[in-house]
Amino acid sequence: MLRSIKLISCGALLLQLTFGGYGGQPGAFLNFGASARSIGMGRAFVAVANDSSASYVNPAGMVQVPNIESCLFQSNLYDEYQLTAFNMVYPMVDNYIGVSFTQLSSKAMELRDENNIAQGTFTDSKQAIGLSYAQPILLPNLAIGSSLKYVTRTLYDNTDARVLGDIGTLYRPLSFLSIGASVQNILDFQLDTNSVDKFSPTLRVGVAFKESNLTIAYDIENDLSTWYLGAEYKFHSLLTIRGGLNYESTNFGFSSEFSGIRFDYAYSNDELGANNRFSINLGIGEIISDFQKDVASDWHQTATDKYREGFFLMALEDMKKAYILDPHDEDIIKKLAKLKKLEQLSDKLNLNLDTEKIIWPQYLKIKQMITDGQKEQALAQTFELLKKYPDNANVTHLMELLKPKEDAKK
Image (cartoon, rainbow, N blue to C red):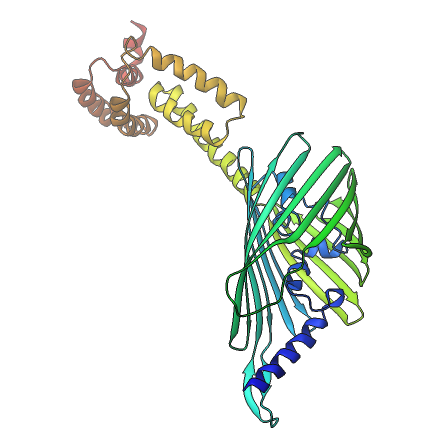
């Protein structure tokens, strides 16, 4: 069995070596990319890092994400392994939280013993769950970030686990220029004694130029021989094209964005062949923002209708809801201030919220009767309301609507 495990290890090592210049280094799967967008740019992204994949590439870049955003990425690598990644950024008041999940898993591979007799199959699987944090510091255009990742690896029936730590920084001295740097695996804390290998720190430094719809980026990693160059140009929200070169592959891709959802595709070609990468980036915050504005508009209209009918305190309740959902709407702010003044005069104006809530559904029903020409039924129900609320202005208004025109003239 010991020999079988050795055979497994050798086979897995050979498969890992197929992933290019990382040479089967421990943790290499954490450098394969987490979005088709960055891969389409040749993986030159540490100084760009302005979408949800920042939590994976450079946590400091999360400060550039204005709304809640997530990305799901999937790629089949050379028909042997499947790489899956999920990243999400949640902006707060003055800091940013990110979560990430990365998994590299193999197809079932044949297991043989020392006599070359088939013993079933085994798989090679690695995954990392990360939590990231970023915050602007010192200067408005300078940010730092960090990540902690819980990493597990499983080969046949052997498993190990560890905690890795990354740090990153992003400096934007000019509106069109950004400089980024990250150090992956600066912390490597092993949680068991099942393995003795170490995850080597990886330093990446990059610069990005952005003018109008064009972005150009260049990264180096550890030394000048490991380099990444990429660019993208946005023609329209429905079409962005990108391309990139690096020390081991040629890449290109495109994306299309609509209503906060961006679909990315990348093609990558190196010595071992070509593969296709796909990701979906969902601007959850943008979608939520649009939804909130729609709901705020509904509450605003409801409040306006109640205000016109004289149900001021109920209108104030609805206008407050509209303000919470869309606090920047000037019309909502103006009407809210007016309704608050009426609330302050509620005693003098004989306004009572509970009374308004009781009368409102009956008020609407009576008004509909008037519109439908059922004035006798409307008058009867209005008299019933008048007995209970003789001093209520809303009921008095109904009586005025029901008075004959001759009485109204008198």
